[in-house]
Image 1 (cartoon, rainbow, N blue to C red):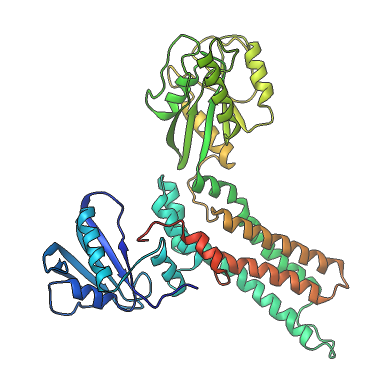
Image 2 (image 1 turned 60 degrees about the vertical axis):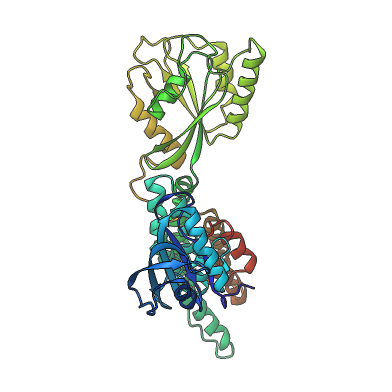
Length: 447
C-alpha cells in the first residue's frame, strides 16, 4: 500500500547546472524539516518567499536560498509542501537533500509527488499522466495537448459521459426495485436513444484518437528508393539542413541517418536509408539490410522516384514490395522534364524546394488523417483509448439488447455498469495499486 504518513524530499528541477534549482519537501513534517535546516529562526509564513540560508549538520552554510511554504491543502500535493530554491548546482542541491534526509525526510520515489496529488484529490489520473506528458513534450503541439489534459479538458468530457450513464443506470435500477408494480421509470425506446447519445459522444472522442496518439508518441518516417533518385536531398529538404551527404555517385548513403523534425506539431523521426538495389560490396549490402529493417518498423514510408527517368526494375520491385504499407510516393526532380506520368503521390524538386510544403502536408495527412493540426486532440494516451474502446463495446452491446426487446433489464444494466467502470478507470475513480505503480514509476524523481 502507498504511504502518505511520512515526508519526502527530492530535487524537482532537471539534472545539470543552471541558474536555479529547486528541492521539494512534501508531507506532514515538511515545514519542521525545512525550518531545521534554515538559518532563519522565524517560522516560515504561508505562501511567502523567504530569503535565508541552508546550513549543513556542521552548521556550515550550504547556500543562500529562497524558501516557500505551501500549507495543505493548497499545495501541489495537497499536503504541507516547502520548496527551496537554490543555485542550480547538483552538488548544492544534493547537499540540501542529504540534510533533509538527516532531519527525517525520505527520498521520494519516481512520480511520488504527483502520486500524492492524485491520492489527495488534487489531480485525477488523466491530469497526473498529463504532468509527465508535459515534461516530456518535444513539440509545441505535444505541450498543448498535455496542457489541455492537465487543465481538465478530457476529464470534463469523460465526466459528462459518466454522468449521463449514471442517470440512465439509476432509472433502470429504479424499475428493477419495483417489479411487482410493473412500473417502468424509463421505456426501452428512451433507453436506446440515451445509449445512442452516449455512444455518439464516445465515437467523437475516438475519431480523434489516431491524431492524438501520433501527436503524443510521434512517428517514424523512412525515406526509401533506389540509389541516386534524391533520397538524401528529400531528407535534407524536410530536415532543413544538409544532414545527409548528397552526391551524384550511386550508393553514397551506406548507413542510416536519422533526425527528429517538427512537422506541424508532430514529432517525426526522419530516417534516410541506403538505395534499394543489388549490392556491389559488403558495406553496401549491410546498408541495404539496415534500410530494410528500418522500413519494417516505419510508421510511414516515403518512396522516392526520379521523375526525370523512366521507372526502372528496382523502382517497380520497391513499389511492389511496399504496396501494402502506409506510404507516399514522392516523385523527385520535378524541375526537369517528366519521363513518366503517375497518378497520386507528391511531385517535388529537392533542388529548388518546389513541392516541399505539399510533401509536409501529405505526411501530416497520412499520419493523422487531417490536413493540419491547428486543434489539439483531447484523446492521445493509449490507456485512455483502450478503456474508452472497451466502454464503447459494452454500450453497443447494451443498445443491441434493448433494441432486440424482451431482454431482462439486468442484462442491459450489466453492460452499462461495465461501460461506466471503464470510464471511471480512465480518471482513476477506480483503479489498482499495480496500475498506479505502472503509471507513476515512469515519472522522474522529484515530479
